[in-house]
Image (cartoon, rainbow, N blue to C red):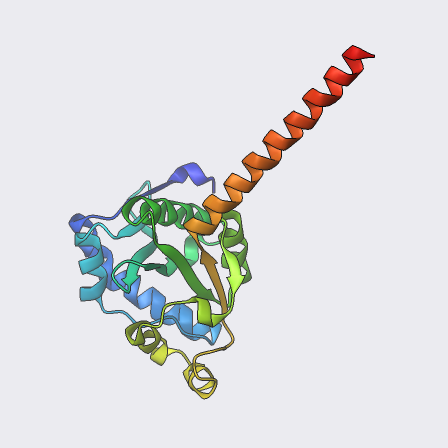
Length: 209
């Protein structure tokens, strides 16, 4: 099945009809993996759609295919792209990557100064995050907001998290820091300028000889 068979777009209040299906799939997927993502109600998912803080994927025939939403912490200082889920019948089609790229783009547009972070045990998600510019970090780099960590309560590994004072668990923490990325860009520019300067001197020296 080619990627062109899916429409990945901003979710709207018209997509609320899929909320129950999305939540049911989130729950069954978490059970199958043996790890948990924060349990969400259809009302919560619907709210994200109404606030333009979610991305939905649909097959061209109208079937629901995937979903992801934005959560913000500490007044928008931190952003998480949460609840990434793909319908079982459409997995291994590259759809998760399309959704992740779309929700990342939405997050950068709505919260350009925010640090975007995620916690995951999935290798596929880690690879996608790396492509987007996320880097592995310690839990201390993430938000201190108690409400965020309370969302881990429905995970089977919550006791491990709490026994380690929220400093470590089975999930890998990954972070996209726009300020650091800007600094890296500036460094690359400087490197390029210095390289051009050295090349110019070399050319001038060659010409003089």
